[in-house]
Length: 108
Image (cartoon, rainbow, N blue to C red; front, side):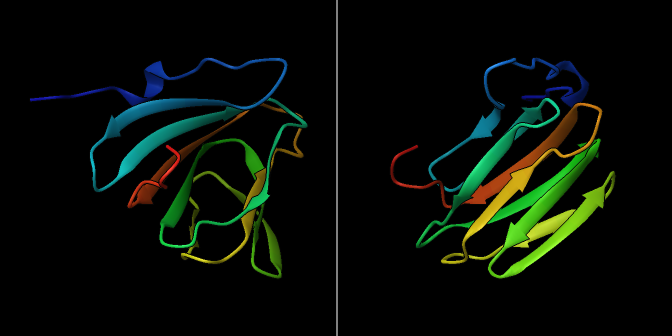
């Protein structure tokens, strides 16, 4: 059985957000994104992949399509295939997000 503890993925970088892969197959990936205050994932889209962000720690501003909202621990944000999406840690504290995408994008 492959078991990983999400609390062990805590590595932040001063230069840019860090992506840590938890699990991956041909059908999905599950990552932890670690964002220091001020770091962001620029808006982008995936033609054939759905993405879900789950806030584990901190507070982030999410953009999906034309909508922008701030969410905190426990929120799950859905970005359907084709929708432009991104996230910014505008808070004073580090943020960690659990990120699921299916299927993985072609360049991953």
